[in-house]
Length: 291
Image 1 (tube, one colour):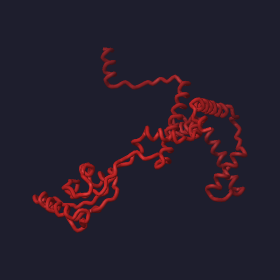
Image 2 (cartoon, one colour):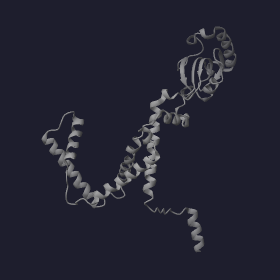
Image 3 (cartoon, helix red, strand yellow):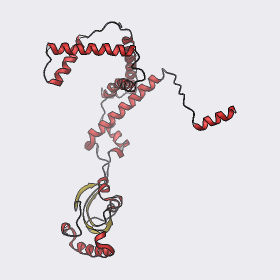
Image 4 (cartoon, one colour):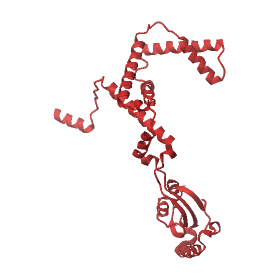
């Protein structure tokens, strides 16, 4: 069944059925008796169901009558507004009608259920969308340039030598100058590293060897001595790790493709003429030719 639902021929037939149904509804509405309003049993049941979902209880008889009166009033006003042409050139109405036409194809697109092969192929074709970011686990000691002045390089060098002797056991909370941010970061994503420390700092973290103190490294705050404990490179995750996300993107892409096909089929029914206003240069040339 899944294989059948993925066949392009079936999609074409379903698309044709949607178009036929759309024009059938338009035709049916146009042939309805202009002076007659019918509130069907199904419509009344739908109104009662909507009331129950909102208020968590079934409506009373009086409330049902009120819903019906509102529906009749809405129908009267909408018909009279259309008769007066109030729906013409209304951007909100036009957008809503476009949405309702696009909804016709959404159900067609939703029929297909992707296989693992479909999702795997989509994941590989859109690898950058799902690729995990590079992450850094590091510790740092901050040196304030304003405090150290001309001795910044000397002080950084002396402190670096001291910390290289201490290695991973160095107590970063007791060293360097006070700093607003944390001194230790676990699996900090590259984008977040850029946000907190700047691009130059993040780029250097990607170059430093792991397991030893290095520096000084510049950031937007000043300079830092850094110990990179671990660096996790970005990668394309396995399908099992991101299946739900891949399926959502696959379904959305499929929906957009079906909407585009639907639109292209409808567009064939029209001869489109676009009358563009003349540019200032075109007007000048036209005036020159007249002279």
